[in-house]
Image (cartoon, rainbow, N blue to C red; front, side, top):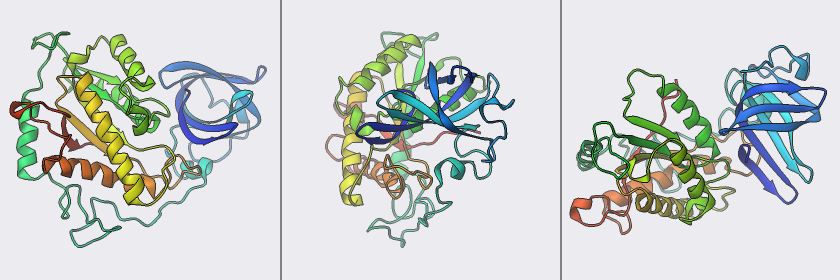
Length: 349
């Protein structure tokens, strides 16, 4: 799959992808780019729209000198009966610059929801109060901080068999959908050249286009098999994976928060249980909610669903703190069913 599935109806799918431009061939009417870990050649639509980082159309269209090899671009793709076709190209990443996101998606700068981190204990959104951990609190409570310290201390370089080794590896892995792979691939690019990153940490992007939480529920489903392939390619064994990052979302959610939010919670819990079974030394899972969806013009995961997904992440963390069934994480007290759950985000710079 080239990129994020943002629309799925019979006969048509719409995608968006961030990639590195290799070549635009006006004569053949194709664009060649590297996106989502693979080289792709995709036909161009006859009425293709080409804009700069500021969202303003480029006068020379696909022949613009700015469209040179190595440039980072966002492409909007539609898949019809004849296959995928690029209908829009924007220099830079979707949302970069002033007005860029609105130029391609026609979205809103705000939908009026207060961020969870800014909601207080007195605030209410569909019966939910504020704070990452509830009660208006954005810092982990003492018991969770102690649990995080415990699990962090147990993360050490491991050999392929999962035994401590000074020349071993700590696998840091993403598991999610395409919005996540766009962010995580950039995070990996920055972190891998950062002198502060330990050479014993191996970052592997296993997030995949179109593979939201529900697609990971089956432990033998395609995204897990692709994750196995990517880990093997990176030289990381399942027993070396100790930390994962998961961005929560489901494709085309419907209904109220009590319906789609609880389904998202259940699907993510299954994903976490599968991850712990697949990666027996997995210690911590950092959960993240979707980025702002006000620019989405399709039903993949628009507002308010993108905003409301944060409550599903919080419910999982709160349920684990309460000792809910299926979320045990301390293997010193019995079999761990999932890793320790914490809020997490990515510093993309």
